[in-house]
Length: 163
Image (cartoon, rainbow, N blue to C red; front, side):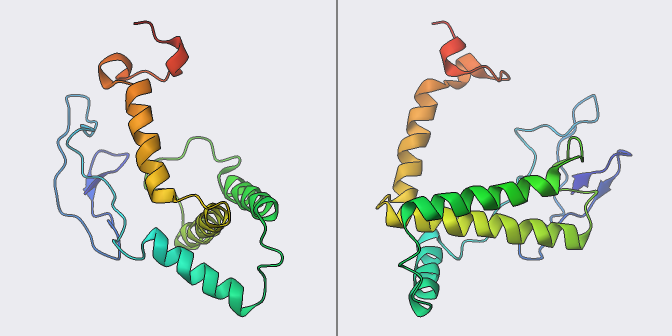
């Protein structure tokens, strides 16, 4: 269930066409309590390795490896991020779940985000970066840099916190 602007709850897709009927906890201001609200989740497949493999096959079938060097992939990735940015440009703040977007707008966003992910995964492959393991290391580092007891509710950079 998602809280609409008028305060009523509506069915929202979680993933893969499923809907959630969970009633989130609402605080005194009519806001969803973030620690108890149901979060969007991805489907378990394909994995990042599946995506890497599919893209490698796609590239091999077209003999594009000669063009898919790290620099070129990075520039393509930046271009795709620009295309995602264009979809948000001039909209002001956008609510989570994109309730004001049309189905074609959401599909366009899904396609552009997919392009970003595909290029990111291929760039990681060409640079020999095991992305899932790198994410685990980075999250551990972020937990040290941003301990919840110090930073809860704040957007300051880690260098701005005092011990």
